[in-house]
Image (cartoon, rainbow, N blue to C red; front, side, top):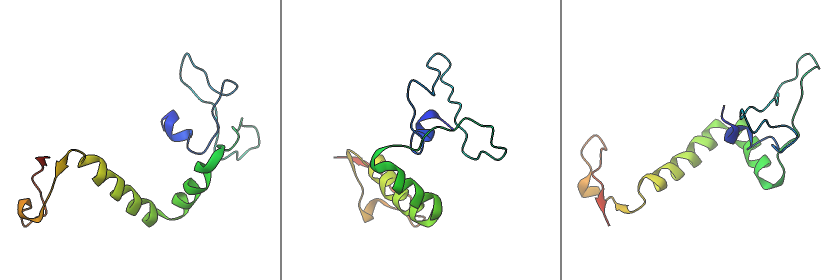
Length: 93
């Protein structure tokens, strides 16, 4: 996982991140009780991440909406430009 992925659920700061190497020593499941855990993320991001972890269908639905929006920024798609397989031609706006 990337640090940006870890930062969604763990609080990364100067005390638990090696800026030179980029490594973060956080553990998610401390099975033997010896790991160094990072505290949970602060703010409003932690609860939505828990919902997504528990409901993959919810994550996929929301991800699809955002991905389509990002991919289509600056372009228009209409039904006339899509073939029978659902492949659409994007046109600049």
